[in-house]
Image 1: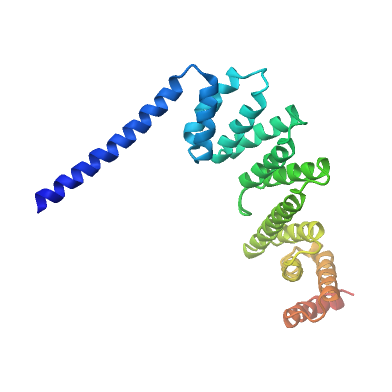
Image 2: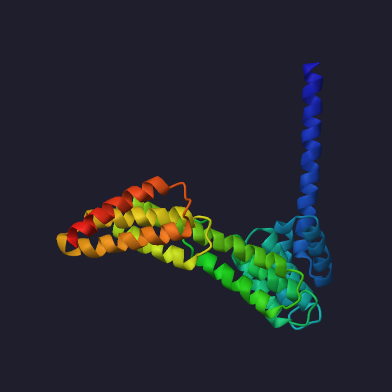
Length: 270
């Protein structure tokens, strides 16, 4: 019984190996073929079957074979798409953009321009990482919107810009909050001022205003004598702006406690 099972397993293994070898053999024949039309047909088949790792070398070769011909545009289109399929978004984005600029009248040109911008979005890092590529993605998406009026992709592009903006907003808040927690109150106040100015409708605004008040107070409290009065006045301004924006804040008791200490100092100095 065990021998029979082992034999069946060996037969299955040999059968699978034969299929794989046949497939490899077929692909090698395609690679070695000198017929560009045949290679193009097979490359499209591989691409449509999701075998982009097989399609890519063929389209890469066909880019030269069909340069200057009527099929060059289709080859280039598939070439960029195989890069995208393999998640090489930087190269795919470059070639999608180049396609849209080189062949602006092609039916794929508008979609290629959008996908170029979308590739930048896919490469944009999460909020805790370097935001340089996030800004680049936003610029590319906005450029697409500005240059493709009426495109069905515009709502998606606007949505991605909003999402990227939220990432930057969270990063700005997290940086300021980090300064506060590390007791770097001067940097915290500066960062919070920038964040509140750049993102006036932020969902973090209430907490940011409270953190700015607390940081401003702590900065004043720990200042040298020459700077105390000025910084307590700045802390008072932070309190007034906070209460003007959120008079019923859940941080009310904490804010009032800081304000009482601020007033005690200022009245003593007057």
